[in-house]
Length: 150
Ligand SMILES: [Fe+2]
Ligand SMILES: [Fe+2]
Image 1: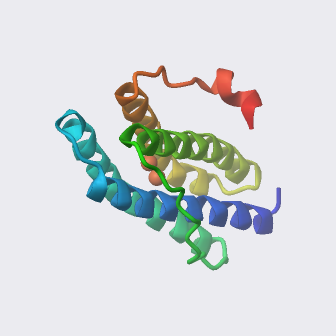
Image 2 (image 1 turned 90 degrees about the horizontal axis):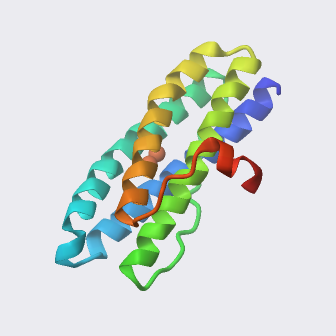
């Protein structure tokens, strides 16, 4: 992987963090129900972490000489609260796998400092996956079980 490819992939990762931000705002603002209160509090905490994730990625892209994207991917519609949380979980799982890969990509491309900068983002994404999976009564999938699903 060369630097240009790494920048492109990081920009796709950045766009997904924007998606997390917009999707979380939509979900936190409109999901209702006493049973959801704890999850909504967690989602709101995630939201502010997503801003950090986006900023971290944008800074790495700039550091590599790229231009951080400003494109926000479309958000899927939902009708049931469970559907909304399933969308959040699917997005986080996708991000977790992508960030694991990106960390390796950065190291292989000769940018261990970029790989290190991604590490707190990766750890928080893992927490998000676990919290959402727990709220949905699912076991978080391990890397081994999801590796072939992409
Ligand atoms: Fe994130
Ligand atoms: Fe997240």
